[in-house]
Length: 430
Ligand code: GDP
View 1: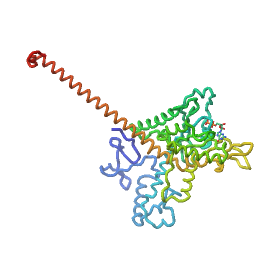
View 2: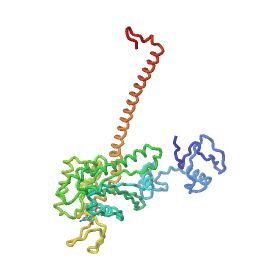
View 3: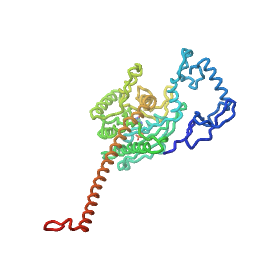
View 4: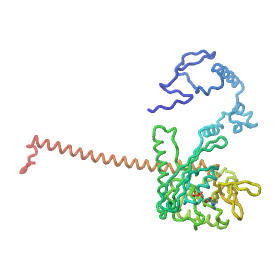
């Protein structure tokens, strides 16, 4: 059996430090088996010496018998998130489990979050610019730009950039997977293959780790979302777009974006969006579906969700420079005829996309990856493995039958040699 790592508050057979029970006066006596022992890690006992603590415990237990304290009356570690922290709760008695979500919150914040985003689409559509604008970073400092000749012969390769971002004490490990070379060759048939392989490899790695011994520290590199960039210059989807999305839609959450939306007039933009949505439907492409609203959800939330659905494909504008106009500084693109503001909802869906990815649906994207895409991969793997085992068993049982037959033949020939009279036929002997 594998050893479980020791944790504060638990001891494991063969690993115990000698146990001592303390008398209320502070003197020690050997531990009596059967007495529950709760140990805290040394460094965490910040409240005082044990006799002192025991004295405090006795005091508090006496007082709690006299007047039961509700969690709302005790000093709360949850400060402004305390669910019992309201005037009307002061006189009520509670068990305290409404703080469970807070416990989960604290634990997750301590652990930090990880998110893997893939960007795909032909080069020059503004993928790097958009990623830098979305996460206010410069992820592509060392990017090598290829010339036309190199691009024609280049195969699709996968690159990965990871950065740690922290905001208000919450840490996010963000991984961006890029697909340089996708759609750049003269013949783009099956240019989605490397992307599919990459996604499968991450699933496979996770499946191995999950079935291995050290499951506690699994590195999750599964791709949670793929932003697929559609060119603003075509008439809707191109064959390569359809092929790519169809090859990937069962493996990753695809969010289509209409690149460089500032190249289109509002009318062109609306038409293009409608056309792309129709084509997605016609070709049976399953893009990421926003979860249905619960019946108890308020109207504002419903409207917001509907607006998100209607925005598909998100028409985006990216920029890594701050421009100044009318006394304001903002991320934007300056043209002779005016300024495009990246974060202005009248100019692009950039904010909607960022809010969706980060503020409202990041967890859902991860859940769908885990519960649907990875689960499908896992089920397929297990099915394949079972089939292989059955085939192997059949093969072995057939070879056992043959080896059994061989053995019988050998016995038979031995018998013939030793007792030829037994095998005598009427006219011919064997
Ligand atoms: P990538 O190859 O897809 O990563 O594209 P880049 O981010 O390198 O952008 C290619 C070119 O398009 C650069 O000159 C960018 O400044 C420009 N660009 C990026 N985003 C936009 C946009 O939203 N609108 C317009 N008009 N140009 C953009």
